[in-house]
Image (cartoon, rainbow, N blue to C red; front, side, top):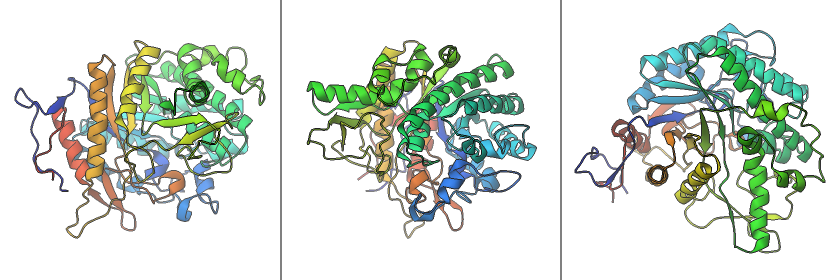
Length: 486
């Protein structure tokens, strides 16, 4: 199979392209610990991911983010690559321990200067900077003080948000508080497959609440510092949960996982309350007394849009011997990330899979977007992550040809287009990821990037999918027929 080298620009004669609305934002995304490297430079201190990755047995092949893609030193090259791709937005995260090493107190100006330079370079290229304040790299000193299960961490996060807003608010107009707090809470403190590697279901629930509180307090802090036209948001990895059958026990298993995966965040953030069924389901573990008076009003802040990360649906049933798969796709552990859901079985959905073992299912994204429109009418949405890992390699001609990724992107962008046609207010799409990078517990064994990274040399090689996505960003249209494909 070859990758197309010729594209048909959208227009009246191009019936094979899905044309997106004018102003739809085309972007790409990364995370600080996954790409920056420079782990001990210019005042940066360890985050929980530094500690975790340096703990034997935690990360595949003993990989760490010490160097990663060396973006801290090669950021100019990476900005040029984005400009060549023609994207109009770049979603990146600030490394909390790079700008506030202990998680409290004054900023380190050298750390902030890195993000000032990066932001200025993006703006010079006409690329909108979209800042995520937290993509999982909690300063280790705050974890030593109790981490996200402790209320004080939420207070520290609000202070950090103010610090970042004061430094970059004159340049950055779009802000995201947290990336995928479900992973921070339930993989970090429940199953232990993410940093800090703790395995306590009550700590996971406490962490979820204090992440919610941190989000609400950070939104307030951002709004106090930013101009009136700035936008605030949060990014959630909303699980599209499906029941294996329509049997009542399977439907109830899906309800239970939906509460733990989704409504534990959307309830307080968007509706101002935790779901009653979530509290009831977990009542044998905790009485939720860590939710104090005033917390829910602090969490329930108006947002300018909701960031949505989607990769694959979640298929569940009651665990009555029919289960063929006990993992939920986030890594193997003897401990579950799902408190009080021991009687739920997870199943591998049918169909093609990525190198992560995740099912390729664009229909899940379409259905998820329709659900969000129904549940939260009037709330704009942004696809802040979508993409796939495949076993990419450099061929003898020096190319990286990745038709499976192109097919994945075409299918999921088609689902977004279909949702827009159905009335869902989706305002942009951020491809995950710009670069191959440190893929958390999988180390460097999984490649999500549109740009191939040769880790020993740091060399960047745009893949065929990067050229394909560049044409989509340039034309604002997704070609459905690929001349030259075979």
